[in-house]
Amino acid sequence: MKILVPVKRVIDYNVRPRVKADGSGVDLANVKMSMNPFDEIAVEEAIRLREKGVASEVVAVSIGPAKAQETLRTALAMGADRAILVETEEAVEPLAVAKLLKAIWDEEQPGLVVMGKQAIDDDSNQTGQMLAALTGRPQGTFASKVAVEGDHVTVTREVDGGLETVRLALPAIVTTDLRLNEPRYASLPNIMKAKSKPLAIKSPADYGVDIAPRLKVLKVAEPPVRQAGVTVGSVDELVAKLKTLGVA
Amino acid sequence: MAALVWVEHEGGALKDPTLAAVTAAGKLGAVHALVAGDPGEAKAAAEAAAKIAGIEKVLLAADPAYAHGLPENVAPLAAQLMAGYDAFVAAATTTGKNIAPRVAALLDVMQLSEVIGIEGRTFMRPIYAGNAIATVESSDAKLVLTVRGTNFEKAASEGGSAPIEEVAGPGDAGLSSFVSLDGSKSERPELTSAGIIVSGGRALKDAATFEQLIVPLADKLGAAVGASRAAVDAGYISNDYQVGQTGKIVAPGLYIAVGISGAIQHLAGMKDSKVIVAINKDPDAPIFQVADIGLVGDLFQIVPELTSKL
View 1 (tube, one colour):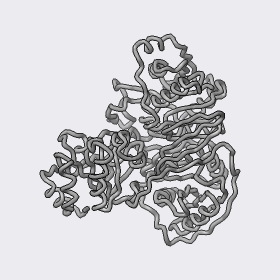
View 2 (cartoon, chains in turn brown, orange; view 1 turned 90 degrees about the vertical axis):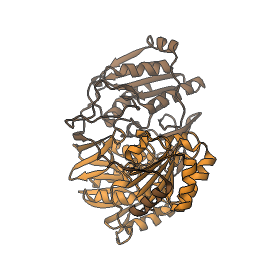
View 3 (cartoon, one colour; view 1 turned 180 degrees about the vertical axis):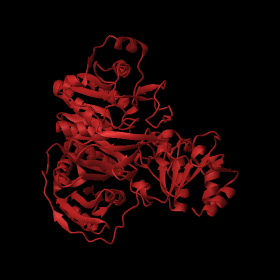
View 4 (tube, chains in turn brown, orange; view 1 turned 90 degrees about the horizontal axis):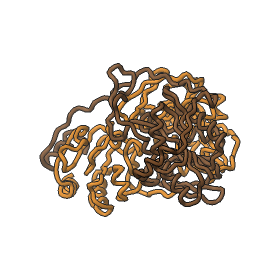
């Protein structure tokens, strides 16, 4: 079975995003970029499934700028077998990403797609569910446990009410939550080895997908800033303060 | 313009975030509600939905295939019903987030996620863990949105008397089945609708200490219990208590953060709280930048003292 793992290059999760002064977006110039943390978990899960003998090949896919090659090399260094970059300098919305992934799905015929539940830049949390709709296949979103058994996959999902387990027919789409696994660090020899693994470069036009945005961003602004608070010196002061505010 | 609201229900009772979704949908036009589920439960939920103020009609899809909101089964149902509507609105809960994008893709619509404000046909939504707010407009013929429950008033759950119309959909797609729900039972208020939340972080040391310190304080205040990702990862408490960018988004009247340093991902989930209290031994912890009242010190002394003095 082949596993497809879509990955996205995003602002590093430790960087505090700054809104551009002209309100056109978030300033990404000279900002550290990394693989979306949920996608790292997806790559790790796919590699573990291959190591267990469940999967035979792990193909990493990214849709993004030329620099997303670095993100794909990271996936290859972690252990993915080969990579595909659908290169575009435009911002691509989840629906268009899902359509591109559907086209790659048709070519590659994977048994499983494992991908992050959301990217930490646009926080959309849509692409996996959309890919599942476009392929007409089941989805196991927000996964904290994935077990492939024959022609089904059992997925334990982190939901508002606790943990929900569903059983899905393969092929299926799984989106990862934080506690699925702890991604490995790529070793130096593996980073070197990754440089020679195959990385195909395509364009959205190769797949005949229109990536024109449906949403128009009118402006991007800083959220309202909270007023500076006070520091109290004791529990008694804290209790008094809470009583004054009428909240406790 | 007419909007179809996805009704979340459990055991025949409505879930709170749905009431906020009704208010959000009301800003777009006439509001109809879709109740899908196992016949017994869905019927009771439809009767409850019919009483929500502002709902003009309830569509009831009673079919065992629609139990547990399996998206493979309910998304085609919703997409089919959307022929008669201009917008599909769901609360941004794990259920709404699971279903709405699947509906959007079936309709070839780009979804608006976690909407926090609606003005005419423009929508505000947080991006980058709430460090920026984008104002967007859609060029799609229909709208699909998930809305944040904390940013819209809840519609009154009594006062309406909408007619209920039974509808049928494609039924079981045969792709998925529900196995189990391992839920944490709690007598305390639910996190996303609680007026007060006491939240603990990694500094609580272990599950037993978390239980000994956080729970009595929460009980004293009639508060819900929350946790940072670090506390959940460390196994102090289960995942459904996590507050943050990818956990639950909360905005209570009072949020008490105990031993939480305040990573941006955590702040994203609680910084709209009315009053924030931070208790932490590190005076430079980022949580103090958003706190209204800060107390620097040893939580192992402060928390029991606070519990006894409230």
